[in-house]
Amino acid sequence: MMSNSFLIDGAKKGRIERLEIPDPGLGEILIKIRASGVCTTDRRIFSGEIRVPTPVLGGHEIAGEIVELGPGVKGLSVGERVSVDSINRCGSCYFCRRGLDNLCINSRKQNKLEDVFMIAGGFSEYMVVERKKVFVGADDVRFVDLAMSEPLACCINSVGKAPLDVGDSALVVGGGTMGLLHAILLKNSGVTVVVSDPAEERRSIIEDNGIEAIAPERIAELASLQNEGNGFDAVFLTAPAIETLENSIGATRRGGTLVLYSSLHPDSNVGISWNAIHYSELSIVGTEGRKAADFRRAVSLISRGMVDLKSVVTKEIPIEELEEELLRSPSGSDQRTIVVF
Ligand SMILES: [Zn+2]
Ligand SMILES: [Zn+2]
Image 1 (spheres, protein in one colour):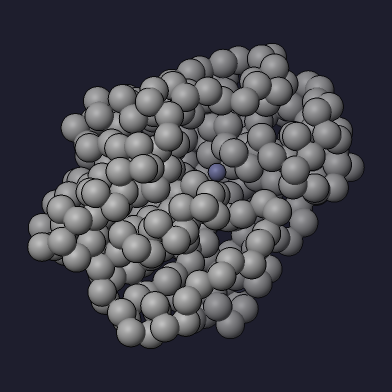
Image 2 (spheres, rainbow, N blue to C red):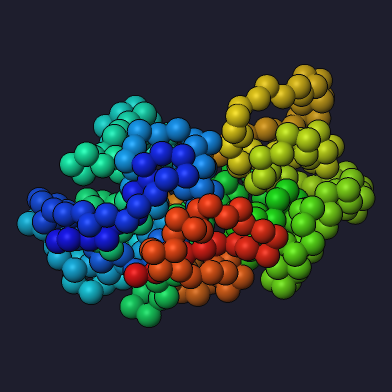
């Protein structure tokens, strides 16, 4: 099967190439991709901020329909709408067997299609994937929504890191796509959410979802309104801003949880008071990707329309416009751009 695919050759160099996608082998499925989200990771790879071997075929927020089942594939049908959990989970390393398959030590195993390095491979009309990476959505789910399964699954994993209950409160730092998805999930769970972001346009998108949005300067003020003045039960850092860390610790109540969702490029050591953590029983936790189980939950929520994604997907483009899109820096009102086929 020939497929138009977008390859990155190096920093700010991309091209569309006709690639030969092989027939699905034993236990594999051929998918016609219908929607592929443009993630910050893709932008960082294109800009050269994240260095990977090239040429590389990116795109890991993938929804499409099944066009062919390889030998031995059971329980799926041609035409079904699916989302692809594209990460490698080897199933045999210590972490996979321990139920922590998001921490699989073989997750970055290099996949290649002839001389092309594959980071998932969603920026392409077709792809072949293993059965275990495919999750079936509803018959009538929109492909652009289903493509948000991957980021939503990562946010489900993150939200689960804080022991929140109905009636609790949370601060989400950063009002980008990930911040918005965190806020939507938390609100759906009966948690009072406040999102902080310096950009007014982003705050208004958050507010359109019935969620309070504030400028970062107001974090302390809002924290003083939670839990009788003791701060938020949990704070999620979805933006890579070191300067927000101290503020965020100050906004978390005693015994509360601070979740570091965003990665930081370049990495940096951050000074945190030992005793601030000790005396206040503050939990600081990381969250990496998502487990396969989180992916299933994301597909289920999206399929049943339980997550309103209308302000998450703000732009749809054909693959011919992907290079131009990757050269742009998203502005305040931009959330997810989706390549549609
Ligand atoms: Zn992503
Ligand atoms: Zn593993």
